[in-house]
Image (cartoon, rainbow, N blue to C red):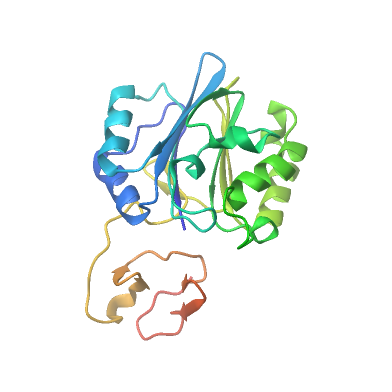
Length: 240
């Protein structure tokens, strides 16, 4: 699990509290990207909460800036600065390891891509492999990220959530279901603080020793490395 926050042109930026929650709940590194002067600027590899927040504050982002923020939980290739997000759209995997990049298109991902996942792969994440091997074939022009059929295909292939930023226009395309919170888009609820409780009463969903009133997944199931807890039918649990 990771989390993406999307602030489109004309929209406020996330609060410090929201960014802190994102990192605390997804603590394996962070990064962000923004569009300026016709290019996408990527800065990532922030492995502590304070380093991440310090870098964001120095940018002094406002409503004029289209920005995508990402905080990671590692599922492949380990915890390291190089596989934090965002990534450039590139056919060269080694460029995915760059911590500071200027490119035409930047990409952030939330999910696990089964078609590019492998326990034998220790250098590149499933996201980096999908971008270099598949996404580059689907997105060849900046207009492709406004094409509904292309975005639907990405969603069907990966069963994931994506934010794709075009440097030329500053447009941010999203794939998958995002939560709209006062015009900010979040890929899941981990930008909110967890609320510790003692039971499953009041429809809370279990996640890592805490409970939250918003589900990790659309089907209200929490999976932890092979262990799956279906909370749909518990007394008091919210229905979809």
